[in-house]
Structures are given as structure tokens and as C-alpha cells.
Image (cartoon, rainbow, N blue to C red; front, side, top):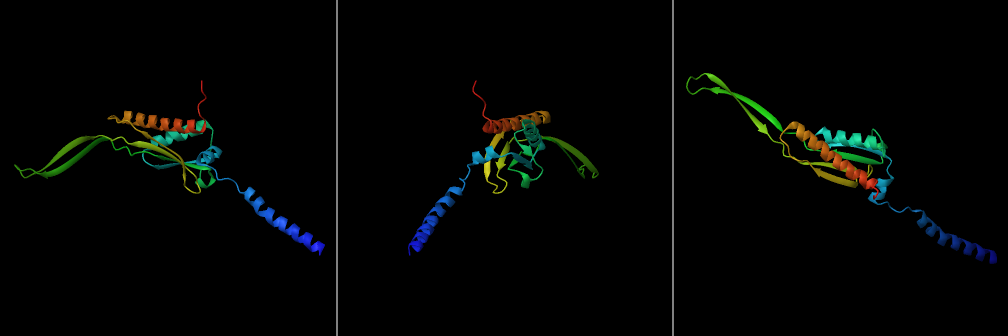
Length: 176
């Protein structure tokens, strides 16, 4: 009888300790900032648009060395998506042929027009590869420009500003 009582008491003690031990084993869910800080590998993706911001940010990430860049999203701790507007500025030339009102012969006419690119934004989003949950996002406005070279320079500057924001998020600058 005493042995049965001790055995029952031991089983009751184990049963009450077991759920408490299981609760301690569950890890706390990480915040977006903590998941981003813990990431070691990254996959870079150009969602759409002009390739210049993608090239600038890719080069900056490679030079930084904070992440090991991988070639597939499945191998990555984070996915870095770059979105930029299409470059639609430039000169358009069109020609048409229609009969002349005076002679009746076909005459060709040519016209050209300057298309201005309405500047938009460059966007960088860092995603969790499994849930596609955004861990960090930033947008930088691209200044307007008429010349193609100036538009390209403005894209480079916007991409650099986004990269520096991201860099400073993970490695804040030291106070002087």
C-alpha cells in the first residue's frame, strides 16, 4: 500500500513538472528586428524596373560583407527585393504616310517628341524567406531629370541612400 502511494505521488509529481518543463523549452518568437539581425545569408532579387538600383545595392551588399550572398531564396535567411521604375524618358520618333491633298501622291511626314520620365521611387524590401513577412522596408524618391545620364545618376544616388539606411539599421553609426 505504501509502495503504491509513493508510486502515485511520484507519477503525480512527474505529471505536474512535465508541462512546466515543456513550456520552458518553447523559444520566444523573434521580432522582425531580431530576425534581421540574426540573418547571415541573403538572396537579392530584382522585382522589376531599371537594373541600376539592383546593381548598386548588390555591389554594396557584396562589399559590406555582413551577409553571405546565396543564389537561391531557399538557402537564404532573408530575401532582399529591389523595385525601381522603368526608364521611360528619351526621344520618340514617329513617321507616317498619307496622301497629299494637293497632288494625291503619298507623302511621308516625320515627327519627334521628347518624353520626360516622371521620377518615381526606388524601394528595398527585406523579407523572411519562409513567410514572406517584411522585416524591413525603405523607399527613396528619385529626382527628376531630362538627360539620360542625369536620370541614371539620380537612380544611383537613390539606391545608395537606401543601402545606407539599411546598413545603419543593422550597424548603427557610432556617436562621435
